Length: 257
Image (cartoon, rainbow, N blue to C red):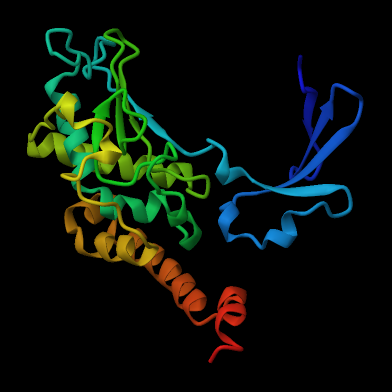
């Protein structure tokens, strides 16, 4: 039995209307804010609408990449390899991993983005990769044909797709230039999110911005003028947020202290 007959979006683009099989409607007001950042009271029915966080469902800016040579062949594919991945694919993976902290300044560009990266949520929590591993930061989708490609799973719903693609390409190209190949994780190590040998992802936008500032090779591919302007904008946002007293702080501390 189908619970909903249809789903439509209002002209504003913010309200989802789900028509139930029994003829009734359920209306949701959508937002990209993480659900745990929202006041529970705002999620109650209000004028016939509920507030739903699109970041709590699997809608993210995953960047999938494959590279073709001049003849149209997928150069990430190598069926003689145990995982069906070429040396260039492994170099691209290593580059993305090496420059993950800096690239996250573009892939997860806001303060709110970092509440997404938790274990056991189908979002990455460490700097990792694996064949067909949905818990890893980089997933190798090795179908052993021309559809073989790499999936960078760090992008969030708030990332600019053009900047996200630029970040992934810059990191991957540096990896190819360096020539270091990512080694396949041992099968007995389990999902990437449970492997203690991987470094953790940045947990705040401040960490990512500092990494972007210190990663000179990565920044140079993006362009110094762009990086300077981008950093100025993002740090201004951070300073404004850190000077703001949140409702949670008031409720938690005002009467106690």
